[in-house]
Image (cartoon, rainbow, N blue to C red; front, side):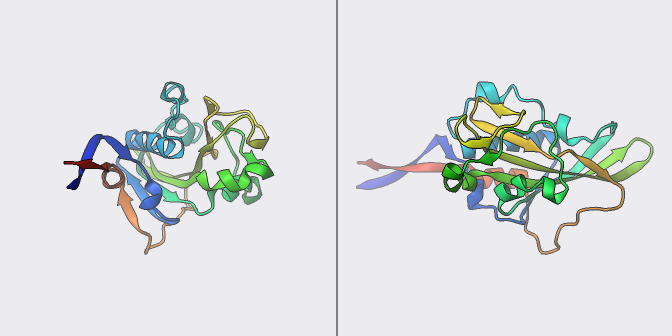
Length: 208
């Protein structure tokens, strides 16, 4: 008969099967957030060059506002709707792209094929200062997307890891009062719970 057996060495990482725009992912610390970056990249391009990707500048260098030396907690990513459009209209929305950006304007020939592969998130985190407690909210936006020499009409200086994956990061802001609030009915999920759901065995028929 035909039975199905799991292959534990192989997993499918497809967060899109679990996440929808407006969902909120919570992280215990920056280390978890950095690990989630690896998950995102593996989903966009499963055969990405990990040796090149690991040489990227640490994410923590980009999401801490200038002259902020405190600690970061309560880190959350809200999943964007239509991240490609949100990226190419960032300046129109008053969002300044900081370090880490790559080429991001897709040529018309490739837009239909590649735009759906863009991943985008709104980042919020609580900022704490020693002796003062919570001093505000850190705000930024993150994008991850496929990138090759031929798929962009406009090339800008920034991070394209092995000409495979690009990462764009909005300059972080430290807001003392103008906080981004999450909708009360937003679906929240902890990163470890999400990761467990994403890592499922691939089942293959076996003849006996």
